[in-house]
Image (cartoon, rainbow, N blue to C red):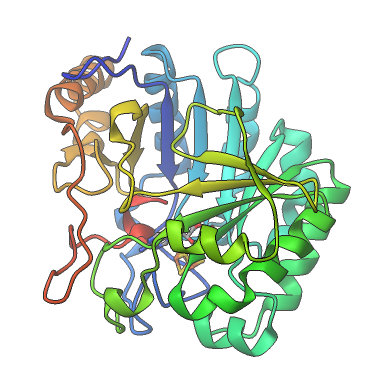
Length: 327
Ligand code: SAM
Ligand code: SF4
């Protein structure tokens, strides 16, 4: 089993399959972002083998992420192989996607054993979407969300709370709840250099909550998933709203996850520099032993908590963008 130095049991892996993306969300990466040469990425077979090594040590849930996972060609082969473990080894296989290519893949995801996905969507306004992401693709994302619903996937809409997005938030939540989708709001984190100062983007969720309470009754919910979100039921919509507050209300004490990049770097903490090279372990003479030792090392070095700060003059907590670590 994987238990770290603070007695936290690790059961959840976020596995990045690419650092590439077809969008350039302003809070995630700069417009001129450069990506790794493809030859540096792990092959799909290596990603599968890694996933098995984590499962052998007690990981029960895997989220495929990126970058944008659905831009990786042949990704569905990996999803299908991992999907076969759902119910025997894995409790759940999920994905986080920006939704631009979801319409083409929703049925295949459901057939492979995926039951729930997170779709990141910060606005329903075409012009704002294009400005925020650098691409005019809101209609494709909405088609993707609709296709996922039709395929029987439960969709959670992830929204990064941004200061200039505040006026639209309640309409976005009303739309999502109207479609039967849960919404999770996330505070923006200082990961990697971007064009805009983080201080201009950041809004604490306590403020968002006050704003939403002008319109709605938010009832604290006892619902828990083992993750960092705290939930409210919105009386007027009947929908559920999650709050993830890495900055304003630290939740690291309950951390149960590890992240692996598309090149096989294991990051025990999203907000810390530590990295363990699983690609080297995978390609060594005795990969099983080397991987098991690498996971033991991860348990020794996983920090107690991140130290994110968003303030004038404070730089990024780590140089890696979220798209590199795997969101
Ligand atoms: N491309 C996919 C997507 O957007 O859903 C998966 C990868 S993306 C890095 C995963 C999640 O990280 C998204 O929900 C995105 O909104 C969020 N994210 C990216 N940069 C962030 C930041 N600096 N702070 C908080 N959330 C961030
Ligand atoms: Fe791409 Fe996701 Fe980052 Fe947006 S948040 S740029 S969709 S990786």
